[in-house]
Image (cartoon, rainbow, N blue to C red; front, side, top):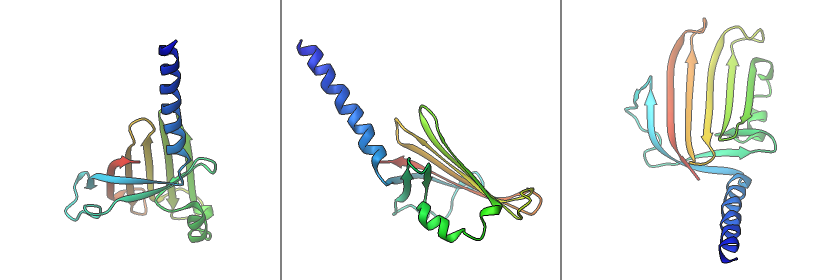
Length: 146
């Protein structure tokens, strides 16, 4: 009987941890690696600062800007933007593409955020393109979020 009660207690603790983590409105991420064009970045933007990711399951949003602020900022560009939120079993993924025109043929910039639900590991690559979908510059940050 004691084992059963202990097992129930452990399940409640771990399930409660997930609910607390994912009911947050933001995640605080300690950056462990910064890359530019797949090489270690010379100028580290997050060497002494953490990255805050806004996290909103209800509105399917994970980003370094709140959805409300993003909607305000990009209100004139909606027809040039695609984004998608994916909730897989083990990870959350957010994909973003901004095009040069409403025809959505040539990508101006894109990024993705991949967040592992179990480990808290995060990857956030960004890509910038020339007018003909030719990659011009890329950055990526990796870290651990809580």
